Amino acid sequence: MQLVYVMDPIEGLLPDKDTTFAFQRAAAARGHENLHALMRDVFVRDGEVFARVRPVEVAPPGSAPPFTLGEPRDVHLADVSAVLIRKDPPFDSEYLYTTLLLERLRGRTLLMNDPRGLRDANEKLYALHFSNFTPRTLVTADKDRILSFMEEVGGAAVIKPLDGAGGAGVLMLSRGDKNNRAILDLQTGEGRRFAMVQEYLPAVRQGDKRVLLLDGRVLGAINRVPRADDLRSNIHAGGRVEPTEVTAEEHAVVAGLAPRLRKDGLLFVGLDFIGGRLTEINVTSPTGIQELSRHCGRDVAAEVIEWIEKRAGELDPQLRSIPPSAS
Ligand SMILES: Nc1ncnc2c1ncn2[C@@H]1O[C@H](COP(=O)(O)OP(=O)(O)O)[C@@H](O)[C@H]1O
Ligand SMILES: [Mg+2]
Image 1 (cartoon, rainbow, N blue to C red):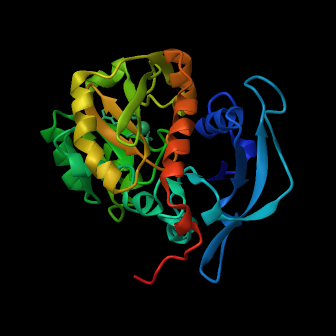
Image 2: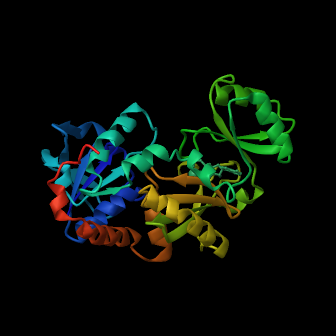
């Protein structure tokens, strides 16, 4: 297979942490070709989607250099087996346009994840579809409303920007804290921008569980325990990774989400759970597969590539050459 990855500049990635690297290593080991593209390498000519790609050779973990890029060439994306959209947030206008261009490939090549799903599923707001599984949550730009919500949920709450990732901008509001109003001014741009506020879940001290899903099924989970001096459990913010299992309660949440995720073409997804409550649904470029593989002793990235082989093989080859209809 040829696999195209639309992603960030490869130089910035951590070889022993990044999930895209793990996919590329597993794909190469199974005899496939990995092709790297930035968002700006995608182009459309007369309705057909192409990308200027460079083959990537990924070295085994620990070796240097971690990867080498080959000579650039143009590929017709409907002819490759899969396009993996693995660009990290922010979700800006270039990201939006990229989803609109790649969307033309639906049904002609495997898209992981589906560009329309990526566009619709803001990582923070998508969880609102499943509010029976989430902590109590408010989305508003109104500062006084946030303060009364904080009181209502027990005097402690977490406030997050709608476009954040890796723990960026996630702050704590607590009754009596003289920083509260300043935090609200910053987070809402003095009442002009939406923020998400959730009841504070004390169980976060035991960790924030990342459950990775493939096509609505559980691949496995890792627990991320925050530093003693931080609210945030993200690996990026210094969270410590430990092995964990998926509880029956969390499996029930996954079963509740799976039909919607499938409908939205969100194939590779990372759910965040604190104390059994769903706090976030990561869809743009969920990570954690390297840590999961190390803790569970399986090559989880290889399982994903194997699944792509099967699913890409089911696409009708006739469709690849037919441009999408006007309907
Ligand atoms: N409702 C909450 N209660 C307690 N801690 C929370 C809550 N929501 C988030 N956190 C903490 O903040 C971190 C980042 O929050 P999250 O919503 O997952 O955003 P991000 O996209 O930045 O990962 C979590 O890993 C967790 O440690
Ligand atoms: Mg998170």
